Image 1: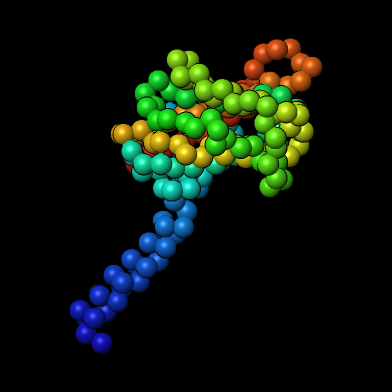
Image 2: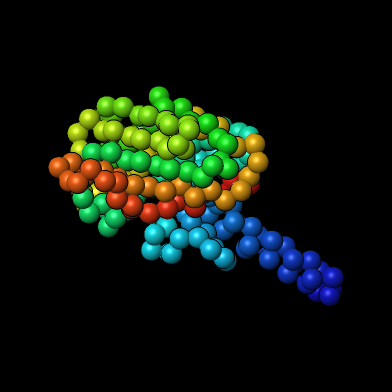
Length: 172
């Protein structure tokens, strides 16, 4: 085999081997953070169903692992930075526990204070994986890294929100 053919074969193998993982893992979990950001133990997993492209409609799947769900939850509060210019559809918010949708009492989007408050009809039990699904989200016109913080309110507890973790959403 000539040198050119071997070189071409090597480039083809490299493209195939490095291209497949990039496609399959895109926008599914927190990536590698070079500078700043919350500590690794505070980062929460997420998925952007439609790629996280600026100025498009998307679905955010914001996950909370069972180990973070140490208390039952009467309210989820998601805050986001002031430079995030996306839009949320409060009628298309869902809370899933063990793959099943939990009935919601109310979802409030406070645009001025940049927070989404989700109130389940019954408290979400502790010790289970939870997925907060935000459908019909209009991504901001410009990409960037956005820190979405999750806080919870437990039933019968002191009425203060408790920090659970942060989703590092990347819109690019």
